[in-house]
Length: 92
Image (tube, rainbow, N blue to C red; front, side, top):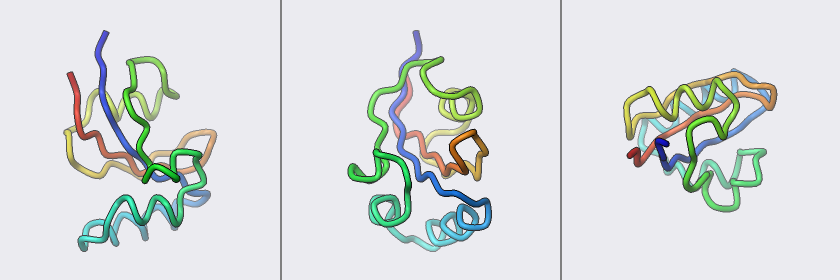
């Protein structure tokens, strides 16, 4: 079963996700933005989700984690929880 390691920022609105994505593109630190803005419990760890197995996350996020390029900010991705920015930093 495929395994990946990813981090994300979860916010309520698409607009907020877009703004944070632009800030990341300008070189702001993912960890700091996650700690300050993410509504997920992973915010304490800079948005780090740790080791994720295929099928463990909601489908929209799972698709990003296992199919999109590594080390590139993906999103905003809508889920029932809100809007995510996702970065995969390892995939096996």
